[in-house]
Amino acid sequence: MYGKIKMSIELTKIQKDILDFIIEKRSNNSIPPTLLEISEKFGYKNRSTVQQHLSALEKKGYLKKTPNKSRSIEPLIEDKIFVPRPVLGEVAAGNPLVIYPDSIDSVELPSFVKIAATSFLLRVKGDSLKDAYIFNGDIVIVNTAVPIKNGSFVVAVLDDTAVIKRYMKFGEEIELRSENKEYKTIKINCNYEGLRLIGVAVGIYRIMDSN
Amino acid sequence: MYGKIKMSIELTKIQKDILDFIIEKRSNNSIPPTLLEISEKFGYKNRSTVQQHLSALEKKGYLKKTPNKSRSIEPLIEDKIFVPRPVLGEVAAGNPLVIYPDSIDSVELPSFVKIAATSFLLRVKGDSLKDAYIFNGDIVIVNTAVPIKNGSFVVAVLDDTAVIKRYMKFGEEIELRSENKEYKTIKINCNYEGLRLIGVAVGIYRIMDSN
DNA sequence: TATTTTACCATACATTTGTATGGTAAAATA
DNA sequence: TATTTTACCATACAAATGTATGGTAAAATA
Image (cartoon, rainbow over all chains, first blue to last red; front, side, top):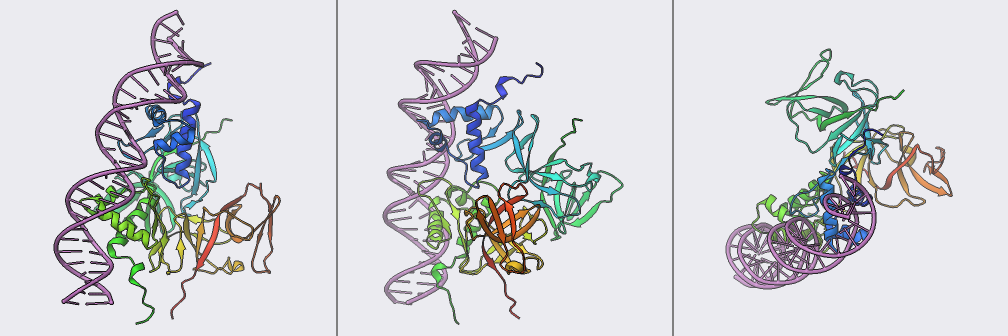
């Protein structure tokens, strides 16, 4: 037996059930539960039991809370044990960005990938993004809540076609640069209506063929 | 002057601003605001001002609250006076259903159209849906939370192409019928993986050319 | 075996949050 | 002009919510 993961970052059955309940609430388009609501769901007599489970989940990095703020539990899907994550859409440069209300698939992400709940996954179709060194089948992790800074890899829709490029802004001019110098830089005014910045590509995950 | 709408169901500028703030919070994938948070946003010195605006909004039917429950404000987009609603995507039968994370447009809906927060709008492109008597430019109101019953108009994705058809289920067989008898009925097994039922088309809105 | 972790309970307390009540001044309406 | 509505303020109170602390018993671990 090798590579055994330390118990302390794994989740117990109950912790996982509670985390799943929180994630389910969120994905149901409803508000995150309070400690009391979780207690009632699991039949506890008071909130302190949940309190401890949550603090364990937070210590292990599976969720984030804002102190003294109601309903502020934010699950971070940190899958040290390969938890499935829904793939919400597909992206191919030159084509519209397609996002399905239901997930089209799910991917098991490895331990080191931390995903905030404000993120979603896109699967890359075709090799039209190879200028960004992103290839067919890659999973792009897009965060919609992270501020866009110079140098960020952004997922954008320009005149109804999707691009993933490095973002640079100088005054009113936005440059969308390709990593590969063979592709030219797109320059647009930041007020141009045909431009929509969807989010920041915070990561790419590629499932390597094991053959 | 004719057809004047009674003042009591119109929104004042401030009420509209507060409602917009709540809707914006919701669509931002973040939790609904508390009274205090709204107060701070608008620079009020205490919650009671917001309290009154909310009760006005609730009385006028623009939002729903659960008593004594934190962050329980649910906007009901009941647009008695043409309030803008974001159009989230586009649909054309035979093509993928395209949904943009940011809205691509907004439409002013008339007074009688009530839209729950679990709904979204799709603009129809092209005349490929004319078999359902839905035409280019029509706005389809899709509710994702309504149960699908026999006879419902459903928005579905079948093998990556979008359809809007009348739904009928007999045992394990699902029929997707066209209103126009020139088009043939699609029959599929309900376990077929290529079928995804997105939601129920609860309404169609067509902006008539005033020329 | 001793210690730690897990999973619960109980209770007290502070803060947040929602609610109720009453007030003022300006604007809109009758 | 009188009344109502709007838009704010102030305050008090109750309920909900988060937090801190301490306890017990069983299971897992060292």
